[in-house]
Picture 1: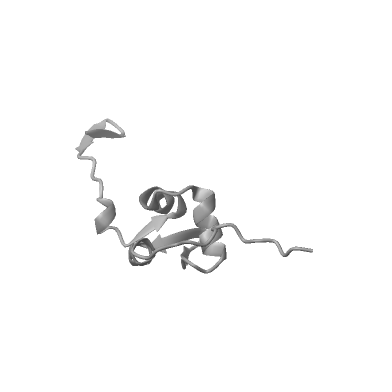
Picture 2: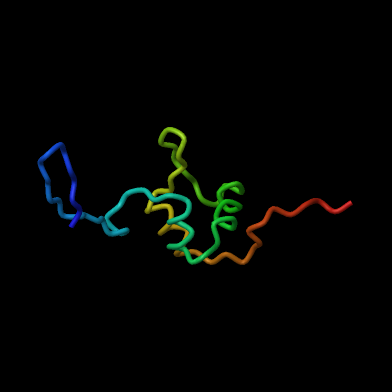
Length: 86
């Protein structure tokens, strides 16, 4: 239980957590954890337009439906964008 103090009063609050499946959007860090890939690899996939994001102010968030869509497909290509050969 979290204890919040307001002046002389003490308010006891039950800590609430929301399951990941119940959330509509997740951060880049949480998305990488859910897909079992690194944060940088997820950022490459976002940059290559393989995964779309939404903005909430300065934060970039990924819709859970987008993570599920991406997780159901096979990915044989490299996440890192390739540099053209000279």
